[in-house]
Image (spheres, rainbow, N blue to C red):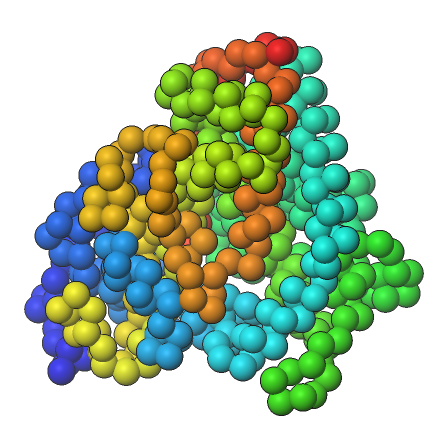
Length: 429
């Protein structure tokens, strides 16, 4: 059996995905291409990492589109219970959407979805457009800006805050705290203690906000979530517990803001680097079809494929299972690498060309389907489409003043990589 094999006997990827320098200039697509061709399922030893691993000493790395999609959809043989990160975080196990399976996952997903009524979605779109116009106009008025922090991060930050009903006065403080949580371990002096201290502080804020919403209901999603009831498959009425609200708050403020920021910033960078595609995006906007136009939806899918806002998600095999001819042993950790799958030439024609009119586009940026397909996918697509719709209407020229700066977030964080600086000049349309 594979579980009795030594590390030396297992196929190695030929690259060390724990090395942050590998991600210093973006995702290592050349390495991913070689892995897909030579070792699509490989073993990554983790004995030298500094974060907690529990009993795990390594993980399997899946790089091909077919394998990533198949395992992502196979909740029977690959459990999400341990959470999306390969780190051992007991508090996360079986405690949030991304770490639940079966009936428990269905119950929680149904409860959370109940907060996003059609009326609330329409209200969020109106709010998103107001934020987008204000953020972009402010940047244009200045003539230049640091695109990531001053533009790309502001829209998802305010959208998540609107969903949760966070007072405007608290937003910069809270999302600075979220950034500290996300980037723990990437700077000198960071410690695991600092990471979990930020998490605890966010939980405290979520609990306080929940108490406020229950005492003084408002017209926002969080008020609905603190009181909503749904019926389970067993016919029982159920509500979100305080702990579940805490975890969903963390998921929203961290994953919901960081991933959309990466897609928007990466999308602007891709358009600047590909002037023909910038012209194509302007043509899509000028056609007047709006953010739900088929051409805009196609363009957003290509931005998501190109930027891959989440690097990987982890699973654990429930049983011995064969993937691409390699036996993965019961109990072993498996990581699914979305940026690699999104450049797989067996699925995508010209995978290294940025083409807003690419169709079909079977990208896996939201997980590739299955029960864990991202609950916020439609919201993220709406934000991205709306941002570029307003950007093209309000900005005539955009020019990079410096190359973008990327910050590797370490393997502790499934997002793994963030564009953190991108100075640009802007002129009004």
